[in-house]
Amino acid sequence: MPKRVLITDYVWPSVEPEREVLAQIGVELVVAPSGDEATLVSMAKDVDGILTCFAKVNENVVRAAEKCMVIGRFGVGVDNIAVETATELGIAVTYVPDYCIDEVSDHVMALLLTWNRRIVPLDRSVRTTGWGSVPLTMRIMRLRGKTMGIVGFGRIGRSVALKAQAFGFDVLTYDPYVDVEAAAKQGVRAVDLQTLLRESEFVTLHTPVTPETGSLIGRAELEMMKPEAFLINCARGALIDEDALYDALTSGQIAGAGLDVLVDLAPPPNDRLFQLDNVLVSPHTAFFSQEAVLELEQRAAGEVASVLQGKMPDNLVNRDVLSHPNPRHSLSAV
Ligand code: NAD
Image (cartoon, rainbow, N blue to C red; front, side, top):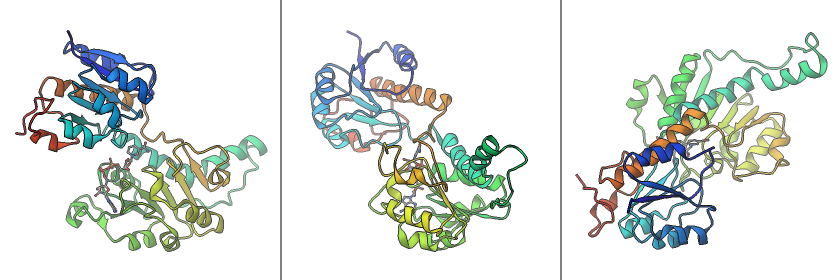
């Protein structure tokens, strides 16, 4: 009987790319009609691998997957997968951490440019009052020579730095886990968070959410920023204290914010931040392009296919599974 992989859920038009990748090694695809726990528990029983996007592959689902060798995440975070249970049972967990670096760093620059060039109010004015009647009274700054502060100098932060440098920005970064020389090699000055906030006209966040980074940008940090500063968050909503941000935006403490993510993962249209003219918002689409999603589908399926063939995947989440005494997978630690 051919091996089978269960797709719990997906948010793109079809799973043909996944089907093609897995068919090359004779593996069949099964797609769950719903991502709820009862459905997944019953469908996981006789599959060899699982691919999941947002559905919860929780402890009950993982334990029900009696012969599963690998669980692959379509994307970066693995918080919807019971990784500890998988490791305990000898199941490999894979992910795709780097399929959308270009897209997210483009999105940061798009928010920055849309804000600075005042595209939204200019577009609205032309449509309502006509071409010649739009006064050029708003602040539009020359970007060359201004300072961009990048919080978190990982994959996306470094990509943003390259694009910002092409626009003539001086780039600062704050990342306690990156050494000063590594940043300097890219022409970026590593500083403490306070210096970054005080000196930057644009501040962009690119860290994961950890106990250290929750509400990293709170009232005190916003107070350090320049009145003409623009804060960009294309990482995770929880990095910003939203009450403090709302107050800073309405009091003029900072000039504006560009947000692709909020604390609420699906905020309602009447969210108070959306009522503000100095906020630009996009609905967690920084990762998106057709190319990025196709790459994600193919690579996530490829990771699962590797483990099913006993080959080391590119991105194994739970390395401890390699020393499991009785693993489901046949990967070797070396
Ligand atoms: P990465 O792991 O490559 O880089 C994260 C960087 O943050 C690392 O260099 C790390 O040292 C640094 N860091 C950790 N703790 C820190 C702290 N306390 N202060 C400052 N820096 C700290 O991650 P990445 O691929 O660059 O992704 C960055 C963020 O973007 C993640 O939160 C990710 O979930 C998010 N993301 C969002 C989208 C989207 O569509 N909006 C898409 C992809 C990724």
